[in-house]
Image 1: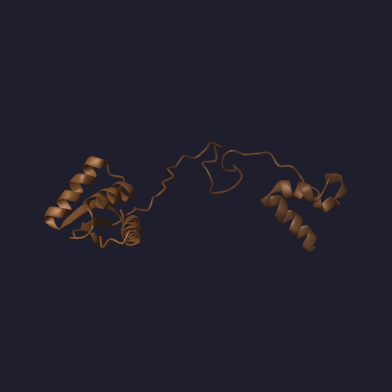
Image 2: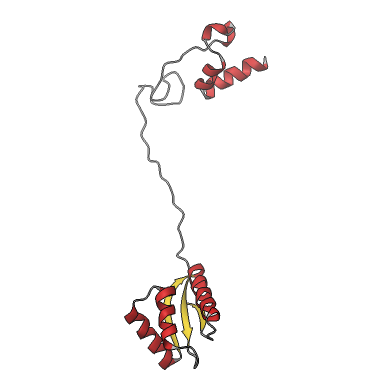
Length: 153
């Protein structure tokens, strides 16, 4: 009885599995033999309440809603001026960490030197955090007191 239900369920869900279970239809007992059914494109005409009884197909609109994605918060990465870090080192850090051209790096370095603080770039949190860490590690390895911070934009 359980085998009969399993095979019937299997044939309803996936006929390919049922065909794999029994090598040929002739090996199965008569009550378990697979009976092929014709394929239908629309609703069954014999089913009450389904379709218009003319055997046509129904049309409808399928809508798929997408979740609204929120833009990540951006953070400004700032260099702070000090009296000990060489200007050339600041230029090299700006070129290496922030991928600035020589001209851009010189401009930012002069702004930091004159104003006390300068913006190196605006990034999502993780990127900004990584850049601040790289600047601080590079400065520490080269024994410079250069400070770099990030602030929410």
